[in-house]
Length: 275
Image (cartoon, rainbow, N blue to C red; front, side, top):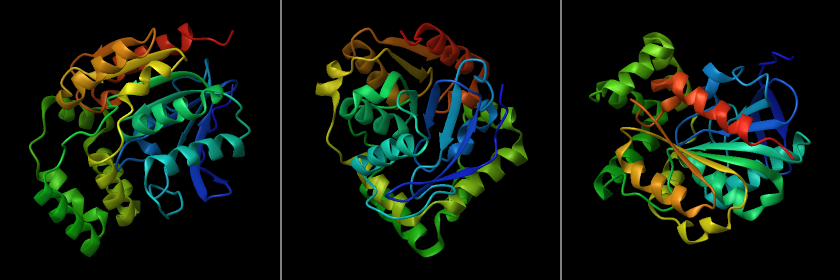
């Protein structure tokens, strides 16, 4: 089996997307969340080599991918489909985390024939009031003046919950903060501002979830409070969906309870094989 993990660059008709891949066979594509990067899944890139060819990529404006708007869900779905085309992936299993989950569910609704199964991870089908008007104004001003790396200081000063501490320990203190620094340093301020607004104001898809026909697992961290009710709604609305709560985790269960997260994803991939 392949242990390929070097970064590649897929040029599409729209822009270039940086990606990594490992393993062979049918594809399993993972989408990171807001302010993240493909490195959010670095610790698990080889975890599914015996089951799938795992592909992680930086969404536009993030990591090593090209910058350029518009930064909205429709464009990010276009990018995902373009990447599949560029990599000659006709059909894949798809996991989306947070913002990535919002992109993933829209992609499956738009192009269901391209997706074999779906994992929705700590995400929601409707806007969430994550920032006040004043907080958005202050954050926008900060990144416009100093770049997104300026967000790191506030993140390091913020009180850290026990799940977050476990995630930091899993990666290693120095490596964790360097990873966050790298992701923020490469993040386009226009992407940050545009997607922050998109997350606050976008057309909900809750009423359309019953139209998702592929096998679906909904994952959510036990302590990811803003996403618990949306997770239950998605699991109750998507036909046949399973809800899996990752014990002891918050918003990044792949770090905060890595073994349980990896087990849940493996269970999904093993259960939902191609016909």
